[in-house]
Length: 138
Length: 120
Image 1 (cartoon, rainbow over the protein chains, first blue to last red):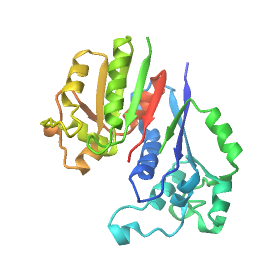
Image 2: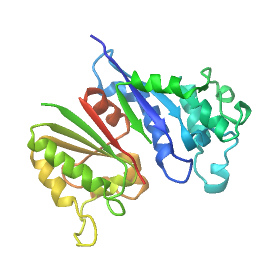
Image 3: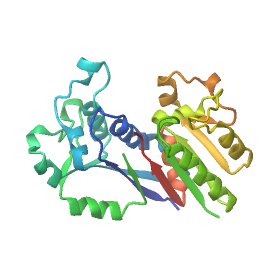
Image 4: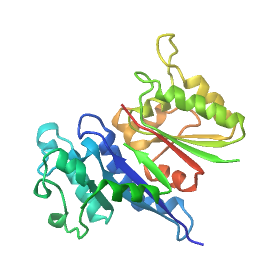
């Protein structure tokens, strides 16, 4: 029987200060090719949740390629949305940091993505974490 | 007996997180469990052969080589993370595998418990 396991990638780290949030995104995106190691029908359901200072990874107009010559976390996040990963951004932390939805990467329409990020209250993210098989904190 | 997947992202030198993860693996294997040990980010440093042991620095090559001989410990390094740091296939410790990140997720899929030890 096919099994689906939910793996939550919880991103708390600041962007660019360390490699953590980039590794969260690249590992989450790797869920799209995990089937090659699994039995027929089995799959990993990824969830990306940005909390605490981690919500700053979701800021628009990142210039990593211009300044450092590396892909931006914005590009990775848009790729995640393009691949229909669920992305939650903690509402309380967005407010705490004085951000608004306009400042955040809410979609990947410019590259053809249809899935959107959601700004979700902390208790909703907690429920998602409760229902996950494994939690990976970055 | 259970299967434990341990993902480590901290460097070999500069943090004791890898030391902890290796000691935990030793303890788990003594109890009969099996371990998938994933090295990503700076932790790929542990996959490099030719590490020299000094008393002032963490030295884990011997410990992981012993663990690899048990047949219950599988160590895999993130290939892209290793290559980005100049650790090539020829530099890899004998018995250590290299795969892309989906290997880790597949290991999580079949694990009874996952311990994800973040980086610096």
